[in-house]
Length: 125
Image (cartoon, rainbow, N blue to C red; front, side):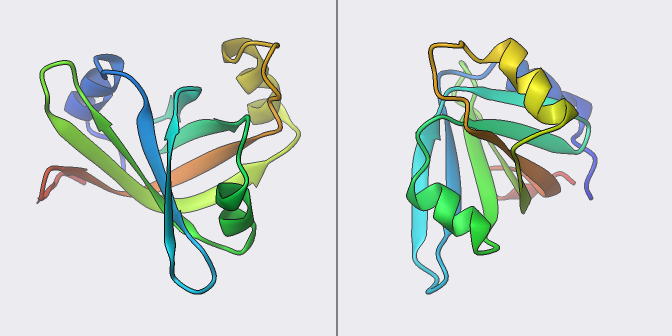
């Protein structure tokens, strides 16, 4: 796994709006969604709550890798790439319930285990 650099963690705290989560289906067709219920779990992983996944859930369950793209309020973009775990119980799932409104479905947590970090075309980790 890659360690998310301090500058990227700071940028994450200064992100502007939703992130984009991209997965790929079994035939290689990409699917991208906007996600607002997101949280950096630690130096190596980012969580996205499954509130309304459909194709995204199917892609993850079929073994898709993924990418998360976000932009800062200053317009600088960053991207995480890696493998995705789909978590439906346990500590990560219970923690998600503390940062996602209980009026949302909160089906599961997609945890992107970061393998690479980019700013634009520049690989940072």
